[in-house]
Length: 252
Image (cartoon, rainbow, N blue to C red; front, top):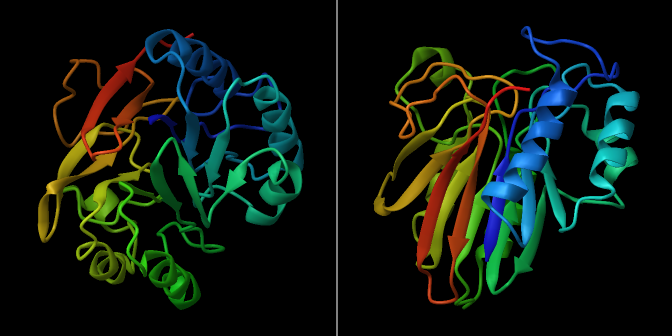
């Protein structure tokens, strides 16, 4: 299974609008183009939150139009800069929206929604945690990947640790006993980040760069390009072998 992760495009209703000094739509177009060059033939595109900075219907409608020609299935997470109801109304028939469970090329993927209205930090909540516990019951032997917008662990920077996943410890309690767990993916921090899952050091927790701009970084960029937009390619086989590749490209 080849999973292409992009994150945090911060799109606007205005196709020519600017945010943080850049044009989010031009940056996303470059990301989609470059991702297919650097990571051809993915089985799934995952965009892990902060899709629409102004939370506008027009922004989500434009994203729907942009993704109409994308050649693979698409999964979307809501971030703190999102409006889940508008997101679902615009893209619910075109993409898989969190919370959701799916199987892609022999790998099980669990998508979580950490959005809470009027909060910068993330929350899963009791109902979603109960849903996740049900999904994790049973003897499934498929490799498992979990994705959420907010980082479920501290990344070592007070700017982000204060606005991470507030019930991350409850999430970890559910994930650590899962023998098939291969990786936990997140966005939100606009940078490459990699660390071990507490209690399961062999399982990586992976932060994804933004398609718009970089924040930080906390860790050195393996490619020496922390300010460039980017993404990540995750490759897993049916036996649980995992390989992940950081992707970078120039701003448009």
